[in-house]
Image 1: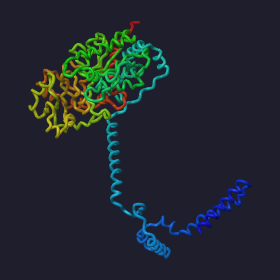
Image 2: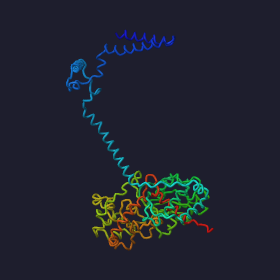
Image 3: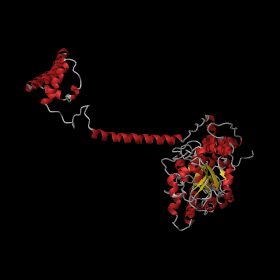
Image 4: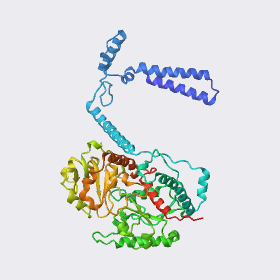
Amino acid sequence: MIGNREIFGVVLMRELLWRCAWKKVDWRKLLFLGVVMTIVGVLVPTYAFPHTVNMWFLSPPLAVSSYVSLNGSMQLREALTQERVQQFPPVSAASVLSPNTTVPSINKRAKIPRTRNSVLKRRKKKSKENDESKVVPPPPRSPIPPRMQRFIWSLSPNDALIYAKREIEHAPVVIDDPYLSAPIFRNISVFKRSYELMETILKVFIYPDGDKPIFHQPHLYGIYASEGWFMKFMEASREFVSRDPEKAHLFYLPYSARQLEVAVYVPNSHNLRPLSIFMRDYANMIAAKYPYWNRTHGRDHFLVACHDWGPYALTMHEELTKNTMKALCNADVSEGIFTAGQDVSLPETTIRSPKRPLRNVGGGIRVSQRPILAFFAGNMHGRVRPTLLKYWHNKDDDMKIYGPLPIGISRKMTYVQHMKSSKYCICPMGYEVNSPRIVEAIYYECVPVIIADNFVLPFNEVLDWSAFSVIVAEKDIPKLKEILLAIPLRRYLTMLANLKTVQKHFLWNPRPLRYDLFHMILHSIWFSRLNHVQIPQS
C-alpha cells in the first residue's frame, strides 16, 4: 500500500514538472491535479494508519470520564479512547503532560525564580521611585531670544562679564517664585538674575594636562566626595564647558586633593611639603605652556578641593595661593589662605553609595514625636569636641552627646535615626572648621547647630544661614541647652520648614539639575569672579 502511494505521487509530480517545463500550462488540469493530491494526502494516511495519527491527540481517560455522557456519540468516543489506551500504553509524563496532570516538585521550582525576580523588580522599582521622589524637578530654563543670544556671543569674555555685572546690579525684583524660597536667600532677586546669566553666558575651559589619578579621576565616596562629584559633572558638561580657551570666562584646574594625598603623601611623615611642591610645579607648567594664566596671574582660574589639606598644598606658589579662586571645604579665614569674598566655601558631603547619592535623604519624623532636643556623636579630635563632651556627656537626658556612638545604643537606634529623631543636630568643628554633619543635618531634616569660629559657611554670599540653622560661638558651649530652649517653637518650625526648602540646593543628583549642589558651587565661583570685575566709568 505504501509503495503504490509513493509511486502514484512520483508519477503525478513528474507529470506536473513535465507540463510546466516543456509545454504550455493548462491551469484547469493543474488545479484539478492539486485537489486530487490534497485529498489523497489527507485520506490515505488517515485510513491506513489510524492509530499513529490519533496517538498524538490521545489524553488520559479521566479527561473523558469526568464528564456525563450526553448522547451515544460521547459514549462511543469514550469506548474508543479506552480501547486505544489498552492497545497503546500511555506516553510517559516526562514527554507529554496533560493539563490536568500535576507535578508538585517541578511546578514549585518553576515558581520560585519567578517569585524572586518579581520581588527584586518590585524592590528595585520601589527604591528608584524613592530616589526620584526626593528630587523636586526645577522649572525649565526660559528660552533666550535669538537676538539676545547673538549679542552675547558677539561680546569678548571680559565684556560679557561686565554686561552680566551691570545686569545683576539692576536685577528685576522677584516677589514670588514657585521654586525658590525667598526666606533662605539674602536677596532672591540678585541670586536669580545672577544664576540666569550664568546659564546664558558662562563658559569654562578645563586644562587637559595632568595624569590620573591626581587629575581627571573623581573620588565619589566618603567625606571628601564633593570635589569628585564636581569634577565628574564639570568635565561631562556640554552646557558650560568650552573647548576654545579664547571664549572661556573661567579656567578649571581639575585635580583632586584627596587623590593627591593618596599618591604623594608619605604615611605618618607629617610632612605636607611634597604635596605643595607638586602643586607648585603643576601651576608653573600651566603658566609656561599656556598664555592664559599670565594674562591675569591666575585670577580667572579656579580649583576645587575638599580634603582638609587642600589649602596647605598651595602654599609654595604665591599666585596659586593669593589670586586663584579656591573652592575649599576647609574655609577657615584665620589660616590666612582662604580669603572671604574671593574664595568659595565648599560643602562637605558624605556619600556612602555613589550609585545612590540621595540615600536616606529626608524622612525626619514629626516635631511632636522627636524625643531628643540635641544630638551629637563622633570622634574626639580638635579643640571643640572635648569641650562639648565635658559639659554635656551624660549630663542631661535631653542632650544626647556622645563620643563615637556606643554599640549598645547604635543597635537600638542608628546614627541616622538619631539625627532624624532630634530637633537639633550639633555640628562642632574637628581638626578643621568644616564638618560633614552640617550637610547631613540638612539631608535628615534636623536643624544644624554650628560650632566653629572663623568658618565661612557654604554659599554664604547668597544663602541666609540664620533662616535654617543656629550658630553658637565656641565660648557659649556651657550655655548650649539654654540657647536652644530660648528659641520659640514658632521660630523653630520656621527654621525646619526653611531647612526642607534649602535641601534641594545641597543634593548631588545622579544627573545635574538646575539649582542643585553642582550648579550652586559653580554659581559661587561665577559670582566671585563677577565681584572682581571692574566696570569702566564711561
